[in-house]
Each structure stands twice: as structure tokens, then as C-alpha cells.
Image 1 (cartoon, rainbow, N blue to C red):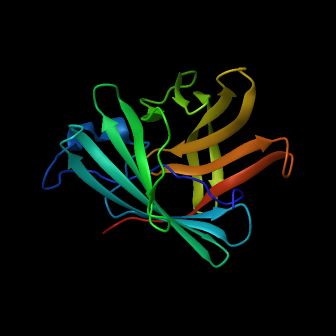
Image 2: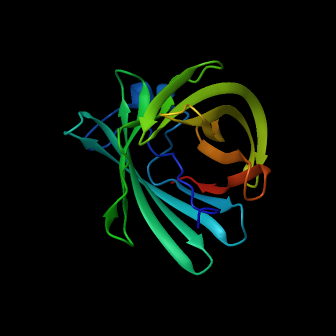
Length: 214
């Protein structure tokens, strides 16, 4: 299960909807937003472990910000897992923040302690760092470099973000992940270095296709 499940962070919108208009700010969110209705498919590391996403965007009066829902359908063999993850765009801080999630199969809220989690701190600049607490761990993200990366969907100029997780009580490094973000596309790949279960580098997900609305 853990070999295949990954949460993808990306979504949808340029221009004005019935309840909001952020066209003037579109360039600020270029590494996270795509047009509403965008559909993406990701291939997982193991055979048959793929993920498909759809998106919706609303103005959320509780937060006073744009609220985004990413519906992630993950297929692990014959098993389908559907999870909705919720984000807001904080215009004051220029941050994309995860505020919770919901699993349809279990009818359970899959939220972490100490939400929200800062997914992106914009604009992306090499050397920028930010962090947040996640349960018993502290997460630090760092924009390490910019490069070209080829995935099944094509070749993109990406920013590489290293995500390091350390235990709060011992400061021991628990994991080191990498995210690859492309302008006007969003998250196109994730990978990690591990010491157990296939030690060394492995790709967790790669963008297989992207379909923009007409």
C-alpha cells in the first residue's frame, strides 16, 4: 500500500468564476494553478499503481481565500482509493496551504495535526526554505535547484524541492523526499531516497498525461 499511495498537490484555475476573480494574480500561482477541469494521470512506481486527478475551485468564506479541492483516485491492482485533499491560496503570505483531506472509501477525515501545511511558498527561488510541524515530526522544504526533467507526459523546466522530515524529540532525519514543480503544470514528479525497501533512489510518481479543458 505504502509503495503506491502518494498525495499529489496541484490544481486549477485561470481567470474569473462566478464567485471570484484572480486573473490579475495568475502569475503568482503559476506553479500550482491550472485551468479548472484539468485532468492529470500519474504512473506509480509499481505496476498497476497509478493515480488520476480532477479539480474544483471555490471561494471559501470561512477562510476568505480561494479554496481548491484535488480529487485523487489511486489504483493499486483492483483496489481503488479516492481521496479529496483541500488547499487554500493565502494571498497575504503567498503560500499554498493544505487544510485537510477526506477518504471516500472509509468515510474518514484524514487530517494531520498542526494544520495547515505549507505546500509551496511563492515565488519559488533557489535557496528558499520553509517548514511546518506534522504530528511528531518537523518538515523542512528547500528549493535546491532548477533543471529539465523528462517524464512520460513530456520534458519540463522544473524547480526541485527537497522535503526533509525529522523527529521532534531527537531531531533524527526520518525521510528525504523530492518534488518537481513545473510552471503552468504544477507537480510533475516525486521521488525519494530510502534505506529500506529498495534502498537508494526511487521515483514515487511521474506525470503520464495532462488534459486541459477547451
